[in-house]
Image 1: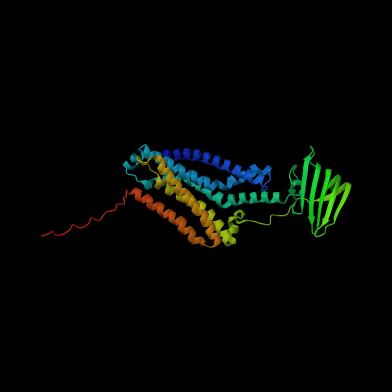
Image 2: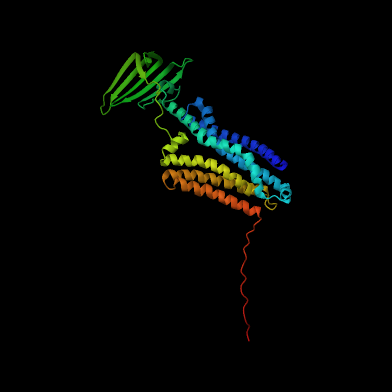
Length: 369
């Protein structure tokens, strides 16, 4: 039908424009947050763009759902405003007959959301955790930054290099503070460089001094050296020991149905069901009221979207803490949202109006004789 085709084309234009705007906003916010985490030492600064890409990819189900919801609202509200819906209703078709073109337009987006939620999302979170773990396990040499105090991987040594030359293997004014069992040592030198001796790497210091003190004793040993070698830790290439539920595959969550896994599974299923429900809710909520304007209706619909996703987040924490069960939570939240959306849609389709009749008080009987 020509009318259905025109609706789908307008939905596609509105959806594409909304998706670009939301993706840009999310990318900007994610970039700011990722840069802040990199400055706190959670990520390698050179991996900021990679982490941002994985994070935005994991947020795409939410972005697509919101873009679809906004596109349906804006297009149908515009049709109400321009009286195109009056023509549609005048041809003998009701509001529920628009479900067919809406779902014909939205089904590829729903499929993409399901694929992202069940397969791409855990893969993206896994890559982020790998980058975080690799940066935490980097060796002492990789941790050294000119002008900054840096702690070693095992936490028993602190390095400081005032400046370095163009060669990153050579540094000047080196300071090392070490604490091993009951000994504390402070070593300083004018310069130092890295040399590999077999499988190990050593920091060779020139022209410096070494202070050594035993814990609990007042004695302090001072030694001056022209050349001193300190072994530095290498990169830890072991596999990641901690695997959060967000980075587990969907089949792995089903095979191990503990609370944390069920909570993550409820989030992924909820992303797909919410996108489906938003099509019905968007059709039921679309409209315009000349007395309050178009903004009020869109603002109310946006509050519905925010409340729905907040319940998704709360439900995940409830399932994880045992305050809610996995199956009943999905049934109550998503089933209830679908039922309320359908009732709202049927009410508008049949033009039902809720009227409250006020009971009139009975007239006083008789009069004074």
